[in-house]
Every structure is written in structure tokens, then in C-alpha cells.
Image (cartoon, rainbow, N blue to C red):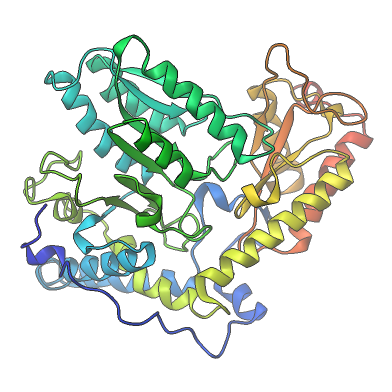
Length: 451
């Protein structure tokens, strides 16, 4: 690690007090003003996909962009590095890291996965790992992570073990049991598990994973390194990287922490990070440590990495700051999920305590959602005909297992609803009424293809 490089910031920096939270809390009218750039008629209950950014932060972003456009050289030499370091210091304190040089800012969780998996792939290619040593991951890992494993690991001779995530899920113990079974499989025939990739919050279906317990089990089983893909975590659940105990931890700041797209932090524990961890875009900072490599990858717009102080000011206008926002979003998404499930006569995909700011709600079986194609068609139909934006998940029945039933048949589709501070009851009522209308009209997904 590059502890002595001043561009990393002072690694001993630690904020002596919590960020100041405003005594004049934000009002509902203020919130509407901050998000007035959103389409006024669309029920936007899909914050989990692309996030959202308030107007005050967009104004701060525009300020940084104009600084660059007015005088690029002064911006590069006098402002950029200090601005990125300031953002990294805030993230360090938010996630309880020991050193600012454990925190790099990258574009998104996909970039972070490439950084970690590139390193694993090189170890296979250079003979440090044995052929058919393996990487462990959840079967519902984000598709870009699966593609990175394919690009960097399996082509270099590594293998992959997938942990089956039960869904609907009833308890953390179900997940823990599946992990233990997959670890036994991964260690069979003398193989070694070189890396475990664990989601903190899975994307589709959305479930909060008992990440601390899973990391502890991986350590006890001798798994060398653990990478937590927490794309949805910061801003929706508490993040304490020392409590989690992983080697690598990534979370997007543009999903639930109000940054403009795109920005994520990658935490690399100082005891496991080495000089062979590099940004996939090689620039003239190559070899100066990942935080510095990531802070300059060539001429581009760095403004999303520079507005973290403005975001902190925004969240501290809420009662309780970011913790208050997290509680508000969790409570509301559970309430809205229960309202939808009751109206449709279906179920939640997980207990409320295994959700954060997103929750899965079963769709009526009479919609006959039988494939991923059906899910995409229904999603498009809701967008185009009802102005509702919500992701839809197709639940593939497992052989020999009974699925969840409503009064008419098996539940094979779920909506993933999000709640962010700008959402209102009317957004969810719009979704509720749209689905009820389709059912009352006798519409099925197959019929929607013909329209």
C-alpha cells in the first residue's frame, strides 16, 4: 500500500465528531423541490436500479463541471486530487475504515468486481493457483459479476461454485445452510476456494444477506479472500467494514446515497491489499496504488466523485441523518409491500427484517407469468400503459418442490419495489390498481404479447 503518498490523504485521519445534522429538518415540500426534475406522472418505485440525485447535489455537480470547463489545467493541478481525497475521507468515516488509503473511488460495483477478479485471474494464469481451484458466489449474483468471472477466472483455468439462494426465503439459517453445503462441494477433490463473493443485498430477487455470519464461516473454512458485493448497501443498511470483516467491499454511492451516476467506493483491507491490485484502465498513475490509479484514468467527467460533501449536507437535513433515512425507507417499503400483498392475495418474498429499502411482493398467479420474457413484457406494459416503473422477477419453480400459492395457483412472478424519500403512497396505489385492473380484465402475460 502507498501509505506515504500524500495524494492518498492522511491515513491517520479520523473525524473527532459526527457530521453536524441540521436543527431545521427538511420538509415534504423541500423534498418535492429537490426531486422536481423527476417525471411528474411516473410512479418511480425502482430506485434500486439507477438511484436518484437531489437538485442541490446536481447544482454542486454542475459547479465542479464548470470549474473544469473554465480552466482545465487549474482544475487538474489544484482541485481534482484534493476534492477526491475529501470525498474518500467522508466515505472512510461512513464505513468505519481505518485508513483513507483503504478507500478507492471507482465508477460502479462492476468496475470494482473487475479490479478484484482481474487479480484472481492473474494468479491462475501465473500458476499461483491450481487449475480447478474455485471461486464461490451466490447463484443470483449480479450478471456483470458472473461475466467478470467468465472473463478473468474461468478462462484462466479456475472453476465456479454457485450457492443456491432459496426464494422465497424464510430465515437467515436457510442461506447459511446453503453456503455450508456449497463450501463442502468447493473443497471436494482437493480443490481450494480462492475467493468467495458474497452479496450484502441481492439485486433480483432482493434479500438482505447475513453477510457478517457468511464471512465468518468463510474464514473458519479457510477460504483465502472474501469480496462483498454490496452495490445496494450504503444508504440503505448500516455499513461497517470492520464488523463485516471482508478483504474487499464495494458499494455504489449513486443508488441509495444520492450521488449522481456513477460512483462507487471499493474498500480494500490494508492487511490483504498488495501492489498487484490495479484499476482496469491503465493510465500514467499505474503502480502508485489503487486509490491514486482510480483518481485519474484519463480525461473524463470526475464530478460525481467530487460531490460527496454536498451529498452529506443533503442527508444531514433529515432527522437522524442517513440513519433516519434508512429507517424511514425500510419502514415504508415494508408497509407498502404488505399493502400490495394483501390487495393481490399474495406474499412477501422475505421477512421484513431481511429487507432494506427494497422488498419483493408476489404477483397474482392469474397473470400467468411463466418466463423472463413475460416479466419484461409486463414491466414494459406497466411503463407504457400505466406510467409505473418497477422491476419484475420470474421465479423458476424447483423440481420436486411446491411453490407458494395464492387462491388461484402458484405465484411465479414478483415485483421488486423500492422506497426512497421522494416516494408517496400514490406511487404504490398506482401499481396496485394497475395489477388489479389487469387481473379483473382477465389479462395474462401471454395476451400482452399480442397487443
